[in-house]
Image (cartoon, rainbow, N blue to C red; front, side):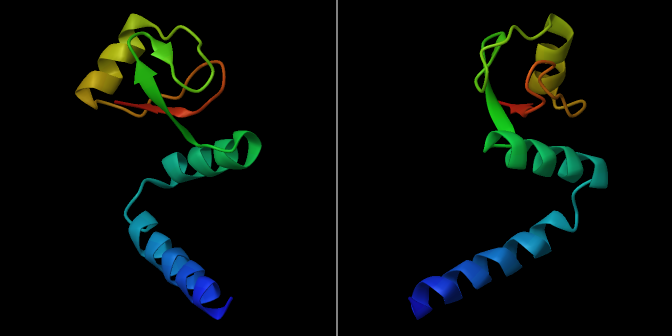
Length: 82
């Protein structure tokens, strides 16, 4: 049990270091969605959100493909990624 606790603490510390460089808005959106839905991100599957199956607009698909901005699914708010 002690090894699991130590590994968990190490992972939490690693996460803290990595999120320092993320935009605050993105982290807040991710955390809210993760708590509410169990996952803060969803894979973009063609033109559909992999989390909820909602159709994603062509403009949002383009933005995800080009990484020009963060794109939350309009139905479930998960951040979309490729």
